[in-house]
Picture 1 (cartoon, helix red, strand yellow):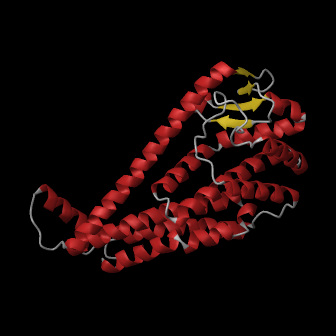
Picture 2 (cartoon, helix red, strand yellow; picture 1 turned 60 degrees about the vertical axis):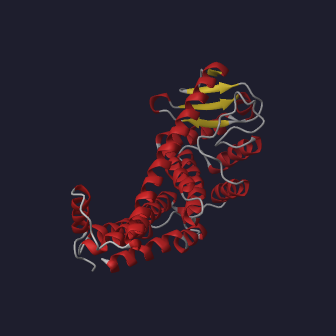
Length: 325
């Protein structure tokens, strides 16, 4: 099992630094945001599994020839309250580290979800007082503010799109339809769940390059995916004008700082650094102004297959008895 632990540790190192750095610099991602999103998810999941798995396998190595056998023996030792001379300091240290890291990741995921839920509940209560339903657009609320503001508030069957008076006055009907389609795409494709998971990953391990890079990349990719939904019924130049007007007014993802505190939504996901937001906006506008052909079927299939393989490798190393000694 020692070789398995070393292979998992090597995979964890690759997925923590060189792989996410290379992917964050890749230019093909804007041509296939969906495939890029799947790959980022695979990197995060496989990286976490490899980190925890490497420590777990190393810690249990003296107790068996494979992980399942070693786990059964370890459980027997714990339940039987038996002493063992096979586990030395570094083995116990690795087991404690694996348990702490796993607990930390799960706890941070739950804590992030609780914080997001609380913020959304509070914001929804404020909207019930300070907004009015849009008579023309279904499941849309309008707030009284001159800045062009558009954002969505997830909540299952209670999900709504929020627009400002300033936006309704600034945009043409076609531009307004593009903005609404964009925001509703975030809701129908459950982008808030992706952002929640990657934000929890970043908060759990803020020192890890992959968590920061993946958070920024996923934020940009979900905007591109929503843009692609809007592009189905809106010309690119119309969508670009709408994006520019909303961006100048403060951004479509969250209300601008000019809004009164009682109206401004507290971001359910902490916004990235300003340069990250500007880079994302520039990438979105660039792919609309100078569109490139989508990634070919063969390359898209290769990316998706590579994503699946990336998840399969640590899983097989951990669970396949006797595959690697």
